[in-house]
Image 1 (cartoon, rainbow, N blue to C red):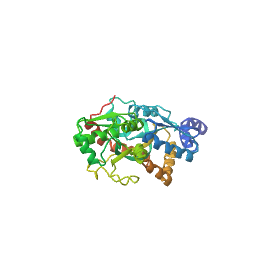
Image 2: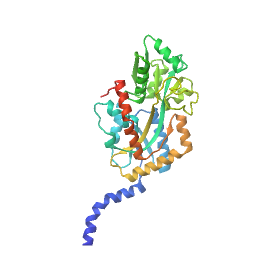
Image 3: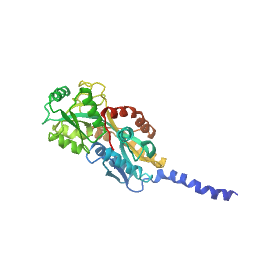
Image 4: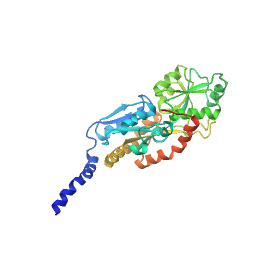
Length: 325
């Protein structure tokens, strides 16, 4: 009888044995991190720093794969449809957790159903920037006065419809009554920046991480940051509140996710490695220099932040009138 029970129980125990051993063996081959945006944007730049650090700590290759399009939905769909074995990670942003479901009429994935958050990875403010060659304003108030006096209005660029830069720009224009403010969507900052430098786009309120190099080079002028406090690497740039725009605190953030069904031991090992990365002072400085702040959290806290911010972004989408198919 005992032997028979042991034989019958063995198949039922196999999934638990595999799960228990996963933490000790993963990763045994290269891991793919899907960035759902083009190269050179903030998500790409910061994900590459994390991939490099994970490679050092886990002893396996982490390959960055850019899958851009549809506000990141194409890349996240690829993550959702990947095997739940820990070898595909998604670099998800606030848009995937809290915005896209209100923006798109049809979604092929659901943030709560199809993904397991691993940990928050970073946050960063947006920055209001203009081209130093084409916009004479040196302060936010000067820009507002200049913009209101332009008979043909202004344009503002973003990495796509419904992104936090788009919604920030729409709210900015709405608050100031800039009726002739045209939104120009691009596929990423790598396209927005050349358009601004050539004078084709007036303004961007975009992720700071993408603009740090051109600000430091002097080709762009930072008018204000959307964080609650001044940013450490741009101490002379005022916050929106200091510049005269109250109640305009907007931060973008990101988290690593894996497909639903990924064994918890794998999630825990990746989470532990990310915690080590976030605690490294050298990594903290690299993130600050890139325009972001490295974060870490439990999987549960990452999921909770996404849910908590949805009402705010649902309202922002409504105000902007943004819709996407």
